[in-house]
Image (tube, rainbow over all chains, first blue to last red; front, side, top):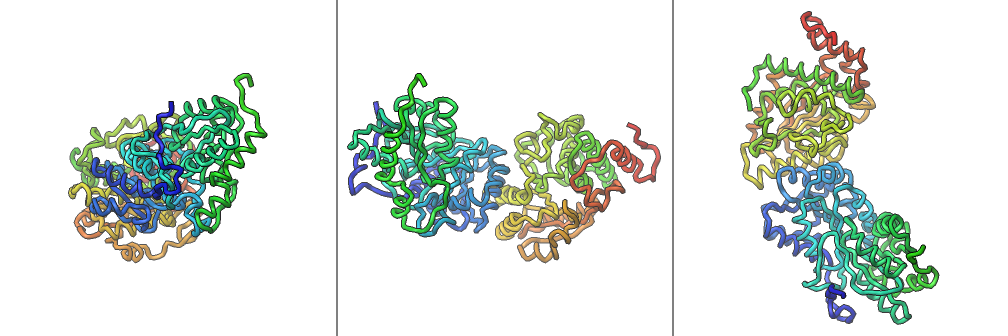
Length: 332
Length: 288
């Protein structure tokens, strides 16, 4: 029944780890080899956003705009007017954090195929602290009409997602992480924009995650299984368009839903899932993420633990949720 | 494109655009008079003399492109486009109405021939620079030109200076920008609201070739653009001194007309001014 191949070494202590942004760098180069309309812009962060791979391969199609993210977005719009497919990259804190209005007016409203790449998102950017920990980007981008929002779960998926958004003809936001994270998928694992994937079937609760949280959910599901709680794990790499069908099917199957993201609980994945469920299938829901507060400095591992975003911490919250909330029933 | 108009024909065309603007804004009941009127001479010159365009084929791959950065002056752009044949003049009166292609601020995807979307200020020069970059470095289209209009109040926006730096760095010589130097913005005179200071020195220091002209003198506009097109190692900015509300005496120089439309009495008086060339001729009395 489960046709999503997971990395067989997923729970090994030696599981391969790689930053999600590395997959983007490879994907961009591959996409550009296939389509000469693709150009890449960066705002003084070329290597850390992994756009240097593109720059080395296609120097004449790379555009440095300096530390000017508003210009980054609007220049990309102008390039799209001229028929290009621009990838505009910076840190998520600045892109879309600094330039949301330019993205809205010059890109989303025009429905142009500009790709906004927000790297170093979430608390796992670590010691840089709250100013650089972008936690509001999913919410900001998913409210924009025409905008596609993708948050890959590992570097392999990031590569596939990059190639997919390169050819989707739409404004798209790709959220990336800085820190190494476990490879959860394989080259054979499916990725399609707008699809969610069930990584593990269960009966008691659906754990719905995006980005690096999906790995933590798989860990949590193992812990919960030891406690007799049978958790389903749903990986949601596309926040918009949301895969309503898979989410509703899973919610109907388990009767309880938990959303987990390395972002504010308000407006992001949790917001999207809450909107869907409350309209179509009111189901007990627990949202886990940054609980309406800013981040702070620390190592990535310390911060995930501090904010309750590790497998064990998530399992604890889920167990409490399962024990205190009864399942949704069809005869509600 | 069709035959180029003569200077006197361009002056008359600019007057036609002003009449169109007054009619449009009166019918819409809202909109921005001052900049729309003061840009009529430059718009007439761009659309009926300078730009290489084909209104019957708005996406023509060899066209010159115009980016409006101060989107609130779009009525005069719509008027120029209608007069040039992109769409019928009747459609001008749908400005700001539900379902119209002529939105209150320009939307690229609504109307063929509009190159960009603007309204929130400061980003039009970026879009123009992106296009000019593509022509110069990616497509090797050296014969096409990119024009951009900015307001002077708009220069308060940081985004403008980001794009000014960008265009300077990359020596975007196919980019010719205008600044509508009418000295007004919503809250008052530009030098009171936020002094712009020495614009020539500022733009020159960003790597631009700077020209200063009377923005109502057709020959000066043509000469400046020709100079800008001939400069091959820098972008050009033409600081165009204009009279806000130009052509309608009770609107001229008054910043209160920045964002206001005339009522029917005011529109009638405005049309009288425009039709009679301020009383110098009597054959065009406005009685509609």
